[in-house]
Length: 341
Image: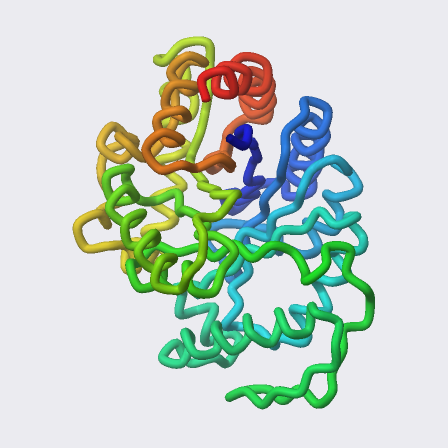
């Protein structure tokens, strides 16, 4: 059985009025600490027009952070693939793969925010078709052979990417999905389903059956690497963890609600406006080292996940608290999880 991998999503979402140069320096400090403590991966999401929050854009951030944390795999988690042109995406990530020494992961998903679709001049109605066409074209370009393909919004005429890939065939494709049809699409098109952070464990258990059935329909094996993202915070005691992290996680989910995240979640598990206690249950992993380790093992035993990507920052969590939880998890939680597998 593969050992558990541990990564962190440097969400980098901050309230208006924050000193973003200072916040950027803090994120780089977090990345350096992760590198020194033996973490496996670093993730950066992708949103545009994030008002009322500040958020740094994905590719420049990953390009810089790879120099700060050279040992870590880098997950673009996720690229809003329907918004872009496939030649541009294939080229950008071929270059990122080269620069990182073959450590890129290509996370992608459909996206759900009207402001992003409108800003890129892309109709929401054709988003699924664009996503599928773009992914097909990107993967063809990553073979490094000339590609001719006519899509609904692009034409490739004997096109080839400009730099060689380190990972043959390109970075692994993780497809993020909330809704049941999107999970079936992840099984059909992706190297794995990148399990979302918003759903309760019981919903994910139900959706895992959908994923497995779809894999069987397409004669695909269960992925060797099965990642999940969760909100995680660890402190010496349960009460301290909730006191420090709870308000920041609640504020982050209020921002998600304002962005419309709940509109693309399953109807029986889409209330993210609940009080912290209800929101956290079977959704967040917050507590003492023993509690966090046991909860991670529960996700592994229930779902088979073996790469846990942790969001350890809410909105405005103090830097000292973030550094403390990164260190506590590496020293006290990860060994317990690996021993318990």
